[in-house]
Length: 352
Image (cartoon, rainbow, N blue to C red; front, side):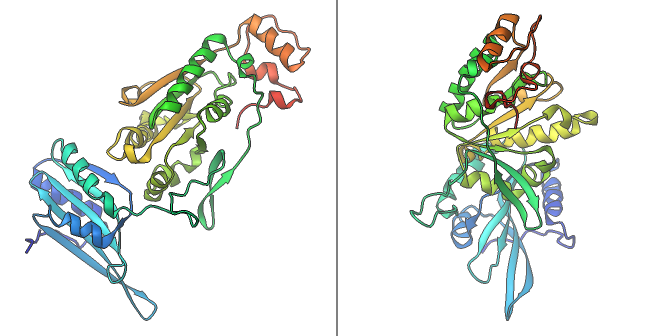
């Protein structure tokens, strides 16, 4: 029989208790790795029981119809330097497991990966009604919005000229093509799109999406807390692999002391570098209207590259105006937005 761990569970925030208990056991602040898959409760606990060297559980009874739903919070000791915390939902019926977190002293990545791999048979994956395959009936271009019913997906269109080479500085277009090929071949990674506002960064997403064949998901800045900061969003990534995740105007997130940007960096690095990155298989594209600084994104282990967007040289400006049928005259190199401004033509649509 497993020994019991003495744990203060009087507080409503059990994650805080888990952290404080492990801090006391380790003699130092624990490292925490959270992941957001859903598992079959019976299979999960059967697998994890072979690793358990002690556990503490806390149950709550919630009225449901004529009976009760029983939720169970558990903290499992794996070894002296690793604990596993999870929530078992509706333990009285057909239980699910989520809100999983590892607390470790030092680097226990190898053991954590081993555990996650062994838990794979218990993983719950969203299935389509027709063929039992993971659901991926996605529009090409999507964004997130919050309604009274919660977070929803909305699709949108991006109509751009197929002759994209006219719209970019030659050096920029060469870099864009190279990075796009890498994104198409990669299962996961981070790409930075940088440059002045109006140089075509956001519009290039149409090119990247079409050439890679992946679906694009644009996260507005006011939706970051509801997406990157939400456990349900990790489940969404797990059920919809091989997508492009885009965040625009990232420089506005820096704020005072770069606190907002650091939170963004940590979330992004978990998606493309973290323990579950091989499951998510997500390519993240961050758009900056200024050179990113003071953040650790360039240290990403799966950094695909950076595309620096520059103004069009004068000869390139003339080629573009002729291509779109504009009679505007320019004397100097210029931004794409200035050249296309006021042009009523499908070829001149830029941005999201």
